[in-house]
Each structure stands twice: as C-alpha cells, then as structure tokens.
Amino acid sequence: MDTFTNRQRLQKINHHLLEMVKGNFSLRIERSDKKDELEALAAAINFLTEEIQESVLHHGYKNPDNIFALTDQMVFILNRSYRILQTNNSVKRFLQFKQRDILHNEFEQLLSADSLKNWRETVEKLEEQQEQEARLRLSFKTEKGLLLPADCKLIFFRGNGVLQDKILVSSSHILPSPKNYELVSLRNDEFSKKMIQPRALHKKHHLYSSDIESIRAAREFIMDHIQGPVPLIEIAHSVGINEYKLKRGFKELYGSTVFQFIKDQRLRKARVLVLYTNKSISAIAKLVGFKKGNHLSREFKKLYGHSPTQLRILNIDHYTNNFNTDTSN
Image 1 (tube, rainbow, N blue to C red):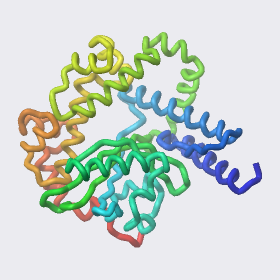
Image 2: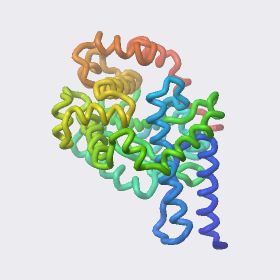
Image 3: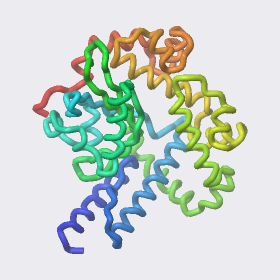
C-alpha cells in the first residue's frame, strides 16, 4: 500500500470522495487491471456514485424543488486534425484544466483509454461516409485524474459558415445548483436508505432489471431515430415490451413521458444547429423532426425563453463571449 502507484490510486479515490461531498456525482474513478483491495474499493465507489446519481436524477425530475439543474454544455471546436482550437468556459469548470494547457493539443489526450476506440471508430465512419453528425459516449479525464462520462454530440461542418471545416464536440452535464448544496447531504441519506432496500424499491415501482434494460434500450432507439416519426408502438416492439409497460416504465425511470422526452431532445438538437450552423429555421425544423418552422419556434421559446431567430441574433452579438480564447487563463 506504500508504493507510488497505490498512493496515486488512493489520491484519486480521495478526490472522488471530495467531489461526492460537494454533490457532484458525475465523476468516476478510472479502473485498472489490478485485482486488489483498492480496485475493489474503486469499483464499489463507482457503483455507489452511479446509483446515487440515477436516484437524484429520478427524484429531481419528479420534484418541483429540484436540487439539480442542467448546466452549460462543454463545447470543443476542433480542426480537421482533431486538435483543440477553442473551448467554452465550462470545460475548465468540469475538467479543471486551464485553457492554455489544452488548446492546440490533440482532443484524444482528454479521453480515457476505453473511449479512444469508440472515438476513433466514430470519426473514421463520419469521414468515410461523409455524414455530418453522430452521438457517442465518451469519458473525459479531469486534471485530478478522475473520469467524467458524457453523452456527446459530434458535428462535422462541411459547408460554408463561421465553422467551415471545423468539428464541434458538445456534451451536457447535470450538477447541483449552488444555492442548494445544503440539501445534498439530506438527499444522500435518503438515497442510502433506498439503496440498502433494493427489493422494497423494486416492489414499490414495479420495475425489474429486465424492464430497466428494455426501457434504456428504448431510449437509445429514440435517440437514434429522433429526426423522424417515432411511434410509441414501434419503440415498444423494437425492445420487446408492450406500450403500457413502456409508457409507465419510461416515466418512472426518466421522470418524463416518452413524447416529452422526444420533444426535449429535438429542441436540444435544434439549439445546437441554431447556434453553430447557418441553416434556416425551417430547414432545422425538418432536420430535428418538426414539420414546420413555426411549430419549432413556439416550442423552442417555451423551453429556452427565446425563439430560434432571437437566440441566433444574441449569439452573433455576443460571439466572443461564448468561447474563451484568452490563453492567458
């Protein structure tokens, strides 16, 4: 236990526990191929963190005094050699790296070893098939050596525009609202009690492991077909469950109806396209699954407080504030 490697591993565990105390359940400890007590401890802490995070998200969606809020996205702009040209301020917030330490470096340097294969296969496929965008799961390395798993959107900008021949990688993360940190410890006690009573929890919600796997698969199916019609019966059949179980289970697991989830995901995709492309609002509406531009604009304003056109104008006016290019930080 007194070797340099083990001290490093203990340090990572310590950093992770400190983040958990702050209410940050998004990070994970990177696993190794060792089979010792430290590795068992790291695995147990990762499992605990994941369970608490899922419980918090589920509780937060259902509770109006939600202690968790969707924060700013991490955004990276890369050149065609996959080197980092620009980032937004959230990158520093989530990964703790100073911008001068990552600008002009290869994007791969921020990824865990397990993520490299997925990243390389995805960009190779996009290059070969001349596709514009893809979704993938990546784990980013923080300055403290922890991992930040994230569902990412990768967009190749092949046409004209301010981002011509650039690549955008974005990810969204859910963290505690600063004004509610004092509530996190109380909720942790609640989650701990639930975790030591798994059978009672399943009995209450009528969701079993097979149901959860099917509903998670349904979510993936939705994300893969978000731009087109996504009938409920088609989703249910794709994962081998009936419509009733899908509707009830999806609401229980994700705190949202299937149709609300589809609409929210379409609006998030539309927001990226509004901010980072020159496509017309009507063209964006069709790309994300809305029949008409005015329908998109109406729902967009309800969620974000601005119409797509207003957001684009605000983004142009404040473009230099959206991306921190001051390498002196």
